[in-house]
Image (cartoon, rainbow, N blue to C red; front, side):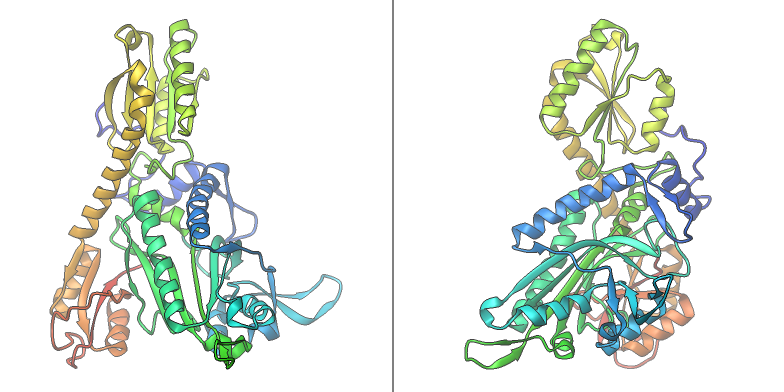
Length: 477
């Protein structure tokens, strides 16, 4: 079958309507469904399994770096939430508030957590006394609620699943190192699991997290040329510690405030995987995050030789820890091919009597729809390398896209022209005044301030003032 033949007709083409393509795919691939509460989604098993694989990867990394999982309450007393001024202002427009039990009005309103800094802070203040108690390296897996006006599955919802790390340290250097180390773990998640090349850097003052001194980010570039903030880490310094009186006795027996960080990624990563890799046939899942890595489709499943080969290959693959299943249902082979193309299963193995007579089976790789014949006895032996090649090629393809859609603008007109093409536009600007003007006039926002700073111009093309930093801009989700 030609690689250009469209097998799945019920999914809108990406080139026709990218947003509708994305929504069609979320529903048709059974990743999610809409719930009766507007803005809240149901994570269906296939979608939740992708999240579980992300969770498993990160949880292992967190524990390797001595972080411990905890769980904080769903609700925050309003008086507690009000303690950090910048934090309150940042989240006030999107907080859900419980005011009554249904029988009586509460004496104090309860905030449904949009994030948990305040809860961690009060806990830390109770349990830390000495430098010997530090550091505290905590993480929690939970959901949060933010009352978004416009929602889209996985990308922006009133409730989403995430992990939020919260740590306190005895020194500024240790806390800053923590924030940057977690950023590196997130970047590695993209490279090793999601086949997504995240660009990393610091957020501008205008774009940083409410209450943070510095925010660092991983950004992914989508095929429509828009950026997606995919995770953040924050250095709080002693701002929260002072607001919540988190002190410890240092080695000199002096009282001192702790230094703090927080960091998190969410189910937004599922949206990134869908958009970065998907095509007009449906999902294209990187093999290490895919719920099912291999599907075996026996042709003429009643044939004894086919049954034997199917079962043997299945057992051999399963013994290697490969996520594999057999579809020997009575549905047509064409339906099965279409279904698993749409669900993005990385490898399809077709086992038919004619192939077996020649001693081989047919393997189809989803990302490029290429077919090859592999000796029956070598399928299990070759599969790890096949999966590795798929992952590396998908990552290279995504990397190439970022490379060819990253521009340097030395004039404001150049900036606007590049922005029309979609992607990242680097420009050296004077500061927040230029950033605000760019957003108002073009809709582009500052995505990162790269760690490696090179000024492309001495003068800001927007304001005419002295350029002080280079910033990557893009339109964003």
